[in-house]
Length: 89
Ligand code: FES
Image (tube, rainbow, N blue to C red; front, top):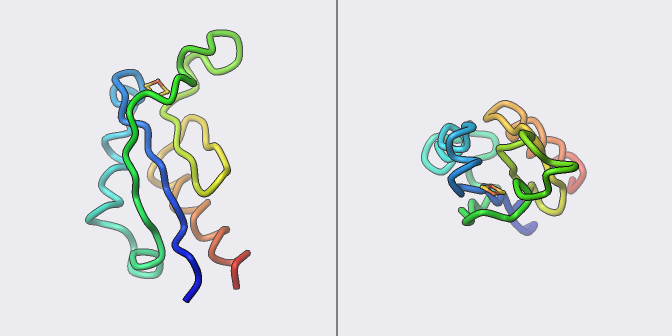
């Protein structure tokens, strides 16, 4: 079986208040087609929010495998996961 797609959600304060809580629901409420293909990891502040020049106000941050999603939302993360699944097929 293919490796699971790693979804790293920043749950540091800044990302949390910007909406990462909603993305965390992927853990128990992912769409059927992706639910068994992902591994969710919650991380403390990834320090991206401290990059004032490039990333300020660009949270919440989520990595899907090695790809960074800025201003992540549940929908954006699900779309990226589906893209990764396609790639692996
Ligand atoms: S709180 Fe998410 S990068 Fe800092």
